[in-house]
Image 1 (cartoon, each protein chain N blue to C red):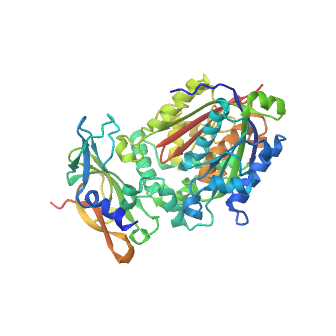
Image 2: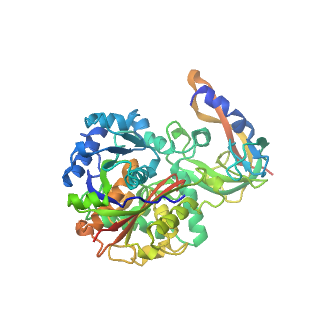
Image 3: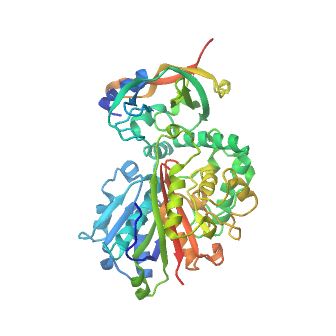
Amino acid sequence: MTCIAMREVAVVAVGYTRVSEHWDKSIKGLFIEASLKALSSAGLSLKDVDGIYVANAFAGYLQRQTNLASIIAEALGLTDTFAVSIDAGGASGGLAVHEAYRDVAHGIRDVVLVCGVEKMSEATSSDVLTAQASVEDQEYFRYTGATLHSLAALIYKTYMKRYGVKQEDVALMSILDHEHASTCQHAQYPFKITLDSIMKSPVLSDPVRVLEVVSPSDGAAAVVLCPHEKAKELGAPHVKIAASQLVRDSFNIVERGDVLAMEALVKAASRAYKEAGVTPSDIDFAEVYDDYSVMGVIAMEKLGFCREGEGVKVLKEGEAKLDGRIPINTFGGLKARGAPIGAVGVYQAVEAYLQLTGEAGANQVKDAEVGLTHGSCCFNSIAVVNIFRRCC
Amino acid sequence: MATSAYWRTRFQRYRLIGNRCKECGKVFFPPRFVCPACGSVKLEEYKLPERGKLVEYTVVYTAPKGYEVMTPYVIGIVELEDGVRVLAQITDVDVEDVKEGMEVEASIRRLPEQLEGGMICYTYKFRPVIK
């Protein structure tokens, strides 16, 4: 069933912290910092908010904190305001934007605050691995001893064999991310890396190497959604949400038949393009979910920016750079901007806003009109595709 | 893992018991409640074959909590004789001797994590078939 928008929906404000190791800030502190920045930038206050979506993946495991939305709403002094947590791994942020979009489009709420927050730096690395693996079905996954790294490795090896490409080709994804992050103020790793350093970094699960994988990080990103008419009244720079689609697939990649199929992403993309009335060639930039280098390469293909197996060609020929045919991960993507997992989709929405309002600074994509964000949980067992459009 | 949760999954772990849709015949491992192919809730127990071949594998160097002592270990996709694919650890073989297409068979092996009271957990792992 297609979601028919009753009202046009705008992102009217954004706020975010740098992705980093924020030893001095709690989940609540990060959330409030990003949210207040967003609200004040549009001349709004907490009193104007009539709905809150909190995107978070791991607080229940890493901080032993469940019931996050109510805890945060209370910290904001908003005891009487609708507040719900969205927990869908790396798809949490994109899904929270999706829910807020529907609320505003259908006239259920007028001013909705979406904030993604994650705090991973204070956990041990094996705790982080266990938390990440907890998005899989525990009654099966846990006793296999498999990790998300090992599943990514199985996908990676299958990809290299099928398309006859090398790790040196796929790893270009991480180089691209770091290049774009090198001028990004909110990036966790704002510096360039070389192929040599990637190939010399330790192997996590053969062939996946450390410098091809996201690192634990902390951060919060917020967007404020409201009807387009209200955004015009507020007078703050704003962008429209043109489409938002979510599709699911089997968690068990082995059960999918072809581990490279990523059917949920293919479907979500095709539905989002239809909803927005665009084709892949209309997309001026995309923020793809590259928790592993190979997943970024596959995402470019499944989103229709190139043919199957030609993702590495896009990277080699520089087409994914800021001045290329289809700029990808314009602020550094998951690898280098950083990946506070539950907040990633909201960071992506923030970045789409910055590009489409011309506020992207050194990372600006020239004349950007339409941008796409892609969220994923467990190798696109949940795929979210959101499309944003510039307002003239 | 809770002792009862471990107990509930004993048949799939000890004997590779999945299930099969009575309506469309599709086989599932681990067992499902509802057939995603046809929507039927009529599912019957199905014993998976214990032999197959290794389709793809990876060597794990960074393990989740409790599994660190096993590294490096091999995780692979095993295609069983009836075509059903399972994710499993490959055991009884040196990491460098693991080969794609290798014939493997199911065996019972100890899990590194222990339940309350020191109860030892077991699961299936696949080992090379010795001819």
